[in-house]
Image (cartoon, helix red, strand yellow):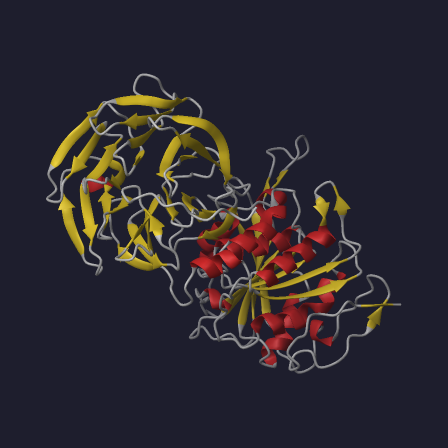
Length: 588
């Protein structure tokens, strides 16, 4: 006989007796998983979604469980289950809702999509399960939020009641087994404001479609407000994609390290539903405990967060409703300037947070930086000009016929401009050196797929250039004449299998030598050795550029589509116009 490996300590209110012993993989559901006398039964309805735009051509069958206690006057909590009805969920919900051990919850149980062949006798259907479940993207989350749940809310019950679902992520739970387990985690990971409670049984956190990267992402991302319960057994799969048993334990350790509210049940079963079925009632009690108190994010043991973040200081909206934003650039006063691309305007944010119009006719600015002379330098891929603006907004043309994407201005006045598509020679990327007198020379040609963001190290001995179409930031040594040498792929940015490129855009450094890179995952912070140590997602999931500003240069400003956000940090930014400073060496 073998004992079920104990759950981590749980609230006594939910786990009030010792677990029984079982033979290997011999888990039997208890009374909470079966119909009980006197407990009113909910109703289950079957539907089909056949017109998905997110997964074109697929047909998804799904079932909707409505508990007997449901009252349309009060939006119900939601549980979304993958692979249809599993874990004896409807019986469990009947019993737990009746005893008020979980809130009134509508269950939505979705089968993976199938693209049916025109003639199933002659051709095979296309089965979408792995495509939908195993990948690390927001596609399935969008499928639920934009297609499935809105269709559920259009349903009228036979007695005429409408189905009203809560849209609060704190009122939503999602669960599944195997690929359905990683899928459930991915939905909450991608949309933590929409789903905050997750159950993953025998989850496929291995390399079928990149799921093995989750432990690394969990350790590096700023913690999200998600509560997670994991289950697996020591005889789970161990094959070409990885070791399921070890992968689930690795993820649990990462979640614990990162401060998540996480629990687990380790057993000796194989890749079966047995243990998941047996523990499902207690999993629901644990996930819904203390509801409606909100699930909150924890504090990570990642010491980079400790060095950077100030407890209680989050992103704040600076400007919204913009016609696209880029920049930002910071002057010696700590004032922040950013461009509103579609309106050709440049705005200034004073150190006390006021927004003022600076320039009204800056055509299509794509990059901005202040120089040591106090002027704001801009480049534009539309006008093909490098321009300098004085304190009154008067423009001086520095160079023309320059397809500038972004720029960095050094303390000595040298200007480095990234040119991802030189006129007349498409895809022939260049990095330009423009001297204070306007003379220019290409200091690197054709090495980078799409050179974008550019910045200087705090001591101004190195130049960093981001490749928008890969996961690399290139490092160059700046020679005494301003030219570049010793090019190297240096900073290795984090990506998921859902991304073909990092979209590495604007970059800045702090005075300790960390590199901050605007990417499609958020602000990736690299140490001096080129390693991503943490990732700060933005509130709206968009990001094109960033800079340090404020009176003490300790506030990170980020341009995020039609919005600009700021966040105060523990660090101080380094600016190109400032006197170079040598940081301490990195820990290797």
